[in-house]
Amino acid sequence: MNETDIAILRAARILQRHPSNPWQKEIQDLLARAEAGENVTVQLIDLLRQNQNVRRWMYEQIADSSAFKSFEPLTGDEGDIPASQRWVCPHKGCIAKSLPVIREGEDPPVCEIHNVPMVRRAR
Image (cartoon, rainbow, N blue to C red; front, top):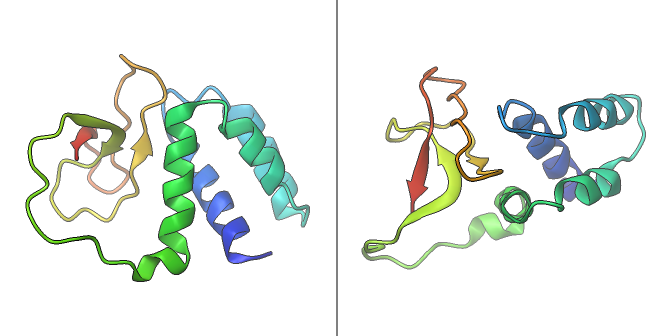
């Protein structure tokens, strides 16, 4: 199993706690097969790429875990950009992983560390 496979499995485990996740059962079954030693990353990608926000979020999770980590963003103010398609903890510096917005109007997930509703991240 390579670094990308591990990142995909980790992201799927994180996504399981999302209250609007319509793939709970499928993800649970695929993760059980992965625990048994089967490579299920292609099936996870096929399942989760159906939603554009989840697809973007998965890409970010993979990028965050690999060689892209050494990339440093440009300095400066990010400006006033509207809320993104990602949920984050409202506590500054929280280390909880973000979650994708799966559909507009959904209830926010809860931060697993602070046990408070997450907010849409302003980019």
